[in-house]
Image (cartoon, rainbow, N blue to C red; front, side, top):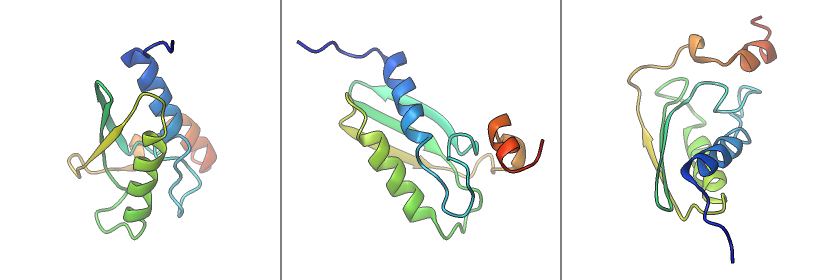
Length: 106
């Protein structure tokens, strides 16, 4: 009998999955880039609210597809809804310390 994962465990697994999604133009994952605004879990559905570095990002389809694929592969998640927003707009202050270090900004 498999143990049902708690929301905290699922969220941690989702964050790990998001850290495997890289913007093809920037060598940093979407989570550390600060593109993920919210993760909400309802039973087996993950609602991800995120943004892009720019509204006209040429890699948007690839990034959104990768987020859906990697989060959808998390055990306990059957459906992924991505809510794309540009409010607030992304800026470099949203980068994690790890991302700033990787990009030579620290």
